[in-house]
Image (cartoon, rainbow, N blue to C red; front, side, top):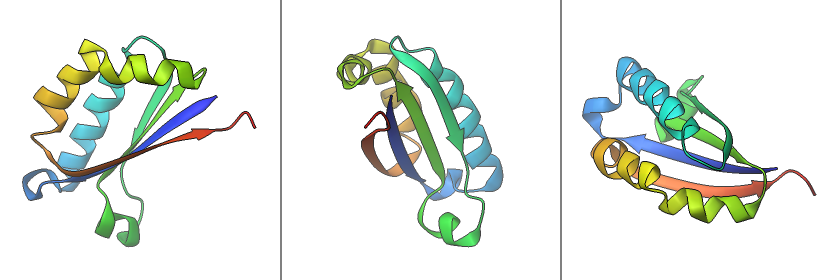
Length: 101
């Protein structure tokens, strides 16, 4: 199982409790619908230390690394980034983790 972990710092306008919750909810639904995704989760900071650095986390699960690149370039994903997330995000960082090893 591959987990793509994405941390997002939102622009000030969206960096509120309501903004974080809205982005997390919409993103979880949008990312779950992309082919190759086994499941997707989104969360908001649980404490002040996390909130000081990041606003939203996405955990997107794939069966294998072979599924990640098609996901990254899929029109649903690129549209999600271009039309929804990028206008709201100041910083995005992503890493892939393998839990099958």
